Image (cartoon, rainbow, N blue to C red; front, side, top):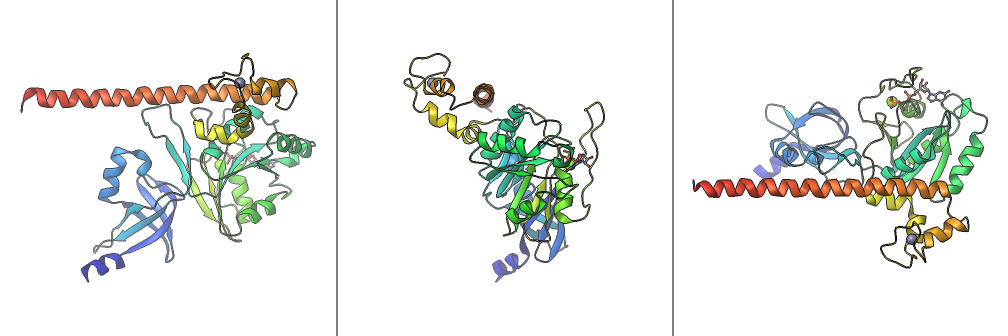
Length: 335
Ligand SMILES: Nc1nc2c(ncn2[C@@H]2O[C@H](COP(=O)(O)OP(=O)(O)OP(=O)(O)O)[C@@H](O)[C@H]2O)c(=O)[nH]1
Ligand SMILES: [Mg+2]
Ligand SMILES: [Zn+2]
């Protein structure tokens, strides 16, 4: 009976935003705000990725004094995780349980393909379906051509051209999530992510701002935020991503599945795809199946992923050494 009563005090909801240790959660009974429960805090102290993040499904408990706490984060179906170069060895979870991960890139100034590749690696790594959303179509005249060129280079990824001024492509995005799916918007600052959310909702629910003329404008959005759409589904806005630390090997393999498939055909298993005999990647470069641009982009990101993996190994080794020394000290003093 007591057990049943305890369960009656809990509910499940979805995190729309986390703000200084307070989770804003949408439940069947409406929105609520909850702190982190004791067990959750202990888990977060060990591993920051255990903290609730936007898009998470969580169990919230109401205490006799009406305090609300998040007791549990339900297992994540997908997660957009940014590899970090810093102290955290687990990376940073940007958002969770998304079905579609959109790389948002403005058509003006002209998209930088290497940047798209980088963001797509992040999107692929999430486990969600990646998508490229080109924005600001109204300010260019060759949007269709740019989209076509991208689509040829990225056969596995849908490319959607949009404009929040003319409304182009907004219905397509709405249709993609209409069945109750969640779309995450990822990309650099000023490329129009929050504007897309506003266009999808139909009113200005999020702040947007022009980039400063020197191109170094502060990021407008500072929080990751889930917004439920009137036509069904949800969209997650994220603050502009700076370049660093996006790459992990899994995501890279997804974004460059064609190159990975080629590499499997190289004569040597440890082929570096530079000038080895029997290199299938180089053969594809020569016969034009693989573009030089894409090859360069892949190699650059691969180097970064390798460096990231090496740093992670070093960090883990450092942690193990510290732990061993700590144990030795404890036992060494005999107290
Ligand atoms: N002409 C035109 N301008 C747009 C479009 N979409 C966004 N903008 C403008 O681009 C600027 C940046 O848009 P935001 O939506 O704030 O960009 P963001 O990606 O959310 O930026 P951060 O929050 O800093 O990451 C704003 O001045 C918008 O009005 C579009 O389709 N056409
Ligand atoms: Mg924004
Ligand atoms: Zn090779």
